[in-house]
Length: 48
Image (cartoon, rainbow, N blue to C red; front, side, top):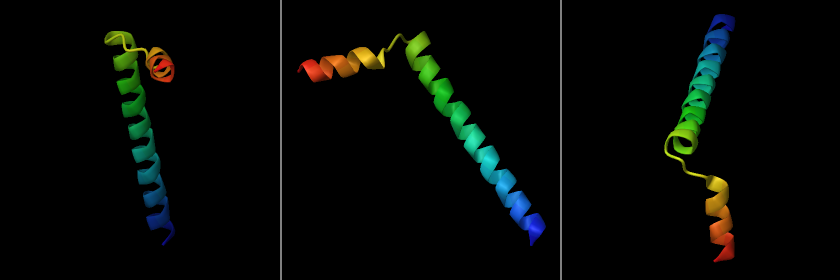
């Protein structure tokens, strides 16, 4: 039982780390490579 819990926890940590890397990579691609600025988009939406 303890080995199953350890394996499940390790799998969960790896998934969380992987999703975090994917999310940050996507954010950096959008902001640095494609030049999308989310703050200016938010300001434009607030201005109407």
